[in-house]
Image (tube, rainbow, N blue to C red; front, side):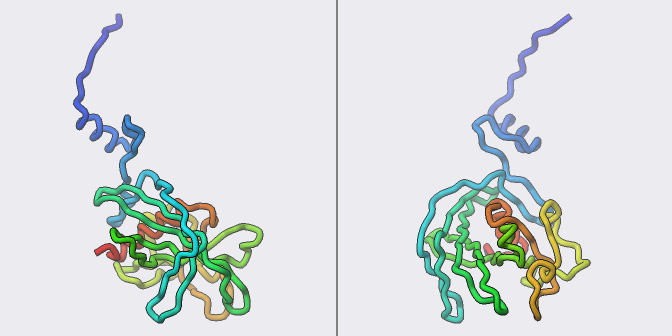
Length: 202
């Protein structure tokens, strides 16, 4: 015997159900997801715009010129976060010209704050891989040593000893995150994790 049952659920209850289940809401949006250690990642990043010849000046007066500078935004529980990935000209690194990217936090008034650098790996020409050091040890800007337990957010990603992928005298013997230069989600999420782990948004 089959019974036909109607269940009434208000919109707020439905949103709470999808939030707890980690599924898309009926309007196509998905809830942010906790990633452990106080880090929250968005369900998805949205492309905003592509800019060209964006200048960023460092504290020592040196500057980068990003071309392109691709802007993305995403929603987490504290509001909308906007980040940009800037591609830089190749720079000499111990005799090798290497491409690099800087991920910047974009403030409410449009100001930029550099958060993470991704440098081309030794085998970049065949893999398109880039690597970034991982900071945030004990909630500071300190790097993680091999054997250290990384924050939970890094578990799904590829992490290695930095020197294994960028090998030159004096290269970091610290942990780094490797991804393709085309994997914008990982680059953005790494920068967002760094912001939260190191309290850079306060």
